[in-house]
Image (cartoon, rainbow, N blue to C red; front, side, top):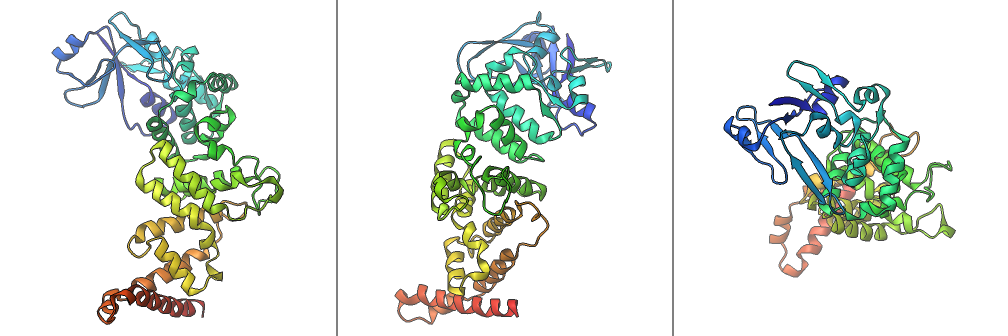
Length: 407
């Protein structure tokens, strides 16, 4: 029996990054031998065990054989005769196909260390094409290691996978898992760019794919279209360390612009309603979690109105607060303002400018929240008039607060 540390732990160690998790491969052992040493079996599709003390994962060396479309169509073969190189050969990228033994010796049969030094993401071999999830994983790694390029032959292979329909077999849960993880990386735009480069974006997120090539007002550059603007918005949300619902909302807030008729470009009149419809459909298709979906819908519907804060009447401001449920869900409304701020900053030269509408709406929210709705209800004889009285009181409070704010 021989034990090796493999994969991401070796990659991150060579990059000088903190090692979060350590995975191990065991060569020359059987499941019975692992159990006899106190390892606890946890793998469903292939033999994986937890160490009795560290609880780290130890997998028996294995090979895989493609038997059907998608990433479920595999038969795994684990046997004491499977070598370390055979196990590493089935992995996705060269930088993830390295191992180190207990004596510190590095095993790198596919040039992973060289590709780390050259900052290249490259597939290990033809087996990459057997699993469409690897396209998503590579795109996610590009978002994490944003100074890495993708090898041209790997882009070409991914494009052939897309053309062959392999990506169409991805299940929604796995798409969302990889997409959400990529959005939480340092530069999420790189994930979208990689998917765009091989044609996968049009199959996985066609609503986002449609934004590229559509002019964006105020960008003033032929290469700075709506798709580029959206990537700038998403990267701004990442640079500020914002949570996943904000980053996802940043990605999908402008979907309706992809359906604007070319004859009205670069304007996109009334795109917000269609954006919300497209967001709802996308979230349903990918089974997006409720918190991400709800914030994205609000951002799609109302970001244009929030941008116009200085032009809105107090009554309109209060209606918007009520429509967004800002008084009962203050944190979600704060997140909505963050999405709008990222949208504002997602233009050349805007990154460090203050976003004044957020200050206006936070002031209005505080004033409306301070209104004692209970006291108004108790003082109103006819219950049917209570909502109107509360609304009027909020409008008055907001008008006074904004007048003082602007003084």
